[in-house]
Length: 134
Image (cartoon, rainbow, N blue to C red; front, side, top):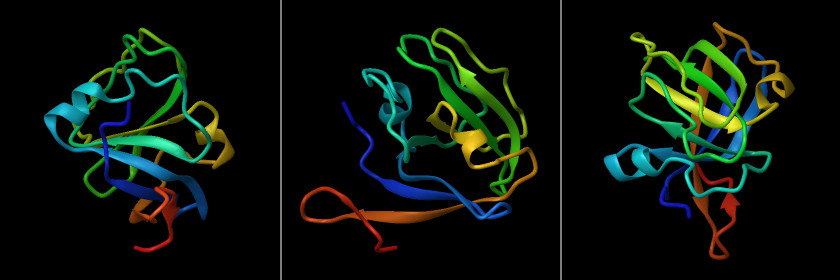
């Protein structure tokens, strides 16, 4: 079930690569608690931006994810690749947000600690598909 209705496109500005073009935003209590629970997986381009967040867990999840921890300037301060179900990250006191992505996205985008990430709002067209309006 998709509780998050806000969508953004995440781009690694340092590398010139896209992390996802259908990143849902979890920015309130309900959307943060639900997170990716109930999902059967993430397709390429999908993801979840949790803010604020200083760490995440995968309790109750059925699939591995890549975890990207971001500071207040949207710079990557930590990465956890292919974090399996029933795991948790440590707490990152300097973190402002966490980006959860399909496993393999970090390597496919050549993302690394120190890279700058940018976000652009994505609108849905009448059919519910993402459009390029920002």
